[in-house]
Length: 184
Image 1 (tube, rainbow, N blue to C red):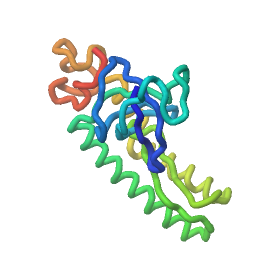
Image 2: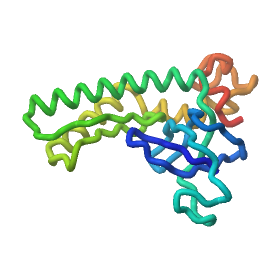
Image 3: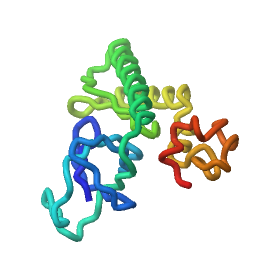
C-alpha cells in the first residue's frame, strides 16, 4: 500500500499495487481513482496497514498501476497544455458573459475522461453551464473518449506483443506509447 498525492489540490490517498511493486518516495505514478486515471506522486509506504487515521481493514482509494514512463511524461505535458487552454477559454467566457466567479484552476485527468474547472467558493449556475459547454467542446475536439479507451486497453488484442503488430489503432506495437503498460 502506498500513500500517493493526486489532483491539483493534492489529496492524499492509499493505493494498492496489483503486482505488489514498491515505488520510491517522490516517484511519479499513474493511479486509478474514482474519477479515472490520474498522475500521482508517491509520498511513501503505508506502515503496517495503518496510516493517516486509516485502520488496517480500511479500503484503498484506488490502484497504483505503474511508474510514469517517458511517453507518459510527454502525454502529461500535452494534457497540461490542453488544461491551460481550457483555463484561458473559461476565463475569457466568464468575462465576456459577465459571470461573477473566480476560476482558480483546471484539471484534465490523465485518461482525458475528466476536465474539471475549480472555482473559489461555490460558482453560480451560469458558471456551471459554461464549464459544461467547455468540457463538451474539449472532449469533442480532442477525441478524448477514444484516446481514454486506448490508454486503458492498448491498441488492440494482444497490444504490446509481436503478434499484435498492425492491429488496432497503431501500425507497430514497437512505436506504441502504451506497449510497455498494456495488458498482454
